[in-house]
Length: 337
Image (spheres, rainbow, N blue to C red):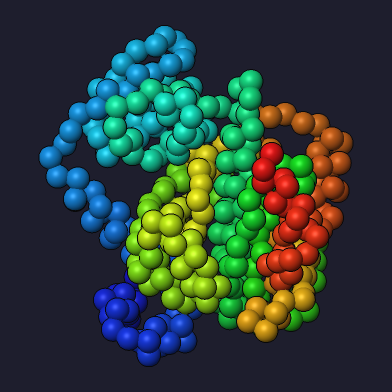
């Protein structure tokens, strides 16, 4: 991070005019670096507040046998519990199930005595694991789309809806204000897919952090869409849940899978233009769509091509441009399943 960005990070609390300067001065890459810098600082601050380490009992249920682990409250994670068993437990576990009811991120610290089960993609009832997989795919898509464009092309991430496996594709709605009529070529879609595959091969852990509404607004001061969404997200408890993959940080309630290496075969299939927003909405958004399989799921080329063709069609999930559309009703119904 250069000295200009460090200075901006220290003075962002001053006033509205300072925030306007940040919006004008930061490139997409600088905004990513600044957000990452603030995330790391806040994570360290929260860790420092833990104080005296307390021990908790984690009762593990699963193979090879049930046992009780003594771990550190607010520090130890399910992933660190998996280290006590085998490399297979570490690599195959996408989520943790805490106390039999709460689906927990593998890298999220445990907060008290609990029972713990590991959830992989081949369990008997994988609905929640599949949703976490689809949700993570959307998050990573936002990261790749941001990195794929040159700095001269502003990329403002808007949002991605709740995961619906039956839709056939994971998506992210993105504002590209300098590209009013962009129609990606097959080569550009291939470049996006290559960027995605490269990030997955790095096997980057998904990190979760709950922050205050004030800090979330400061972190996303360069993105007017996120800034508008944050107050309603924080309305219940004043907190906003963030996820980090590499240096990319985004908002999501989670949970997410353990790391990007659990995303196997993947392709970005299409980009559709969405229009019809209100006066306060952007004039248009682009819906980026893709399809993926978890690592270890084998599918022949013909079968995967069928999934790819299906994922090219416009995903019917609720559009931010027309929140009261029929698609909205369909999405709400899907969310209840």
